[in-house]
Image (cartoon, rainbow, N blue to C red; front, side, top):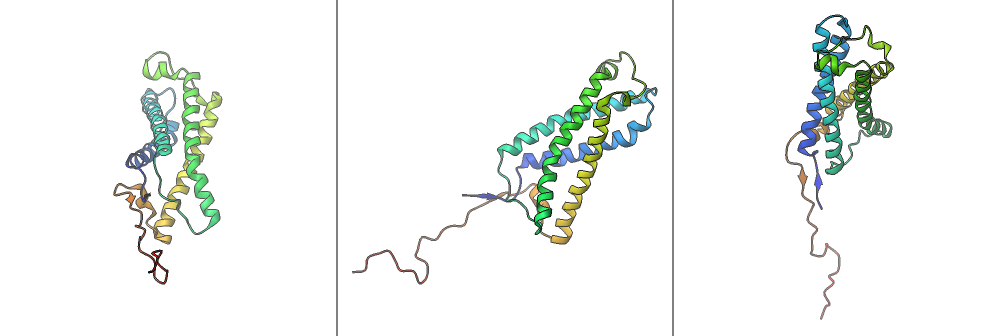
Length: 199
């Protein structure tokens, strides 16, 4: 029997790639897109990047979920506090529904606003205001929840690194991951009688 000390290399790569992509997409949406009027031609270019990144993030998250369900994981980490352990367990699993919710609401909004034809086909024009579409509200709420979850995730990593100093982050980096099981001794333990019949 073997144990692993790190996550699967593909899961590690997807974790860091998705972390960068999700943060970049959130920043583009919250800091750039929101400040460009829909009448500005630059809005279409920014939307094209945002929508492309969103579809790619959704695809990679589905791949990550598949890899996660089919690979061996390290033993559950502990913070030494039952409440914090439950919070960590829940927060890790919330990433998937929030990302899927953001992508889904974005796709529905794009279809309602005919964005694929406008952004990728050059046909038509952008609507005056995306807030006229109900999925925009969900897209906004999911984005803020995801930002808060990322902040919580980073805070947890810093807590483990600088306060607990348990090297938890090593689990999400590349390196040797298999720990060989301890060899069980075959000779009798001290002070334990041998099973051999004495003559």
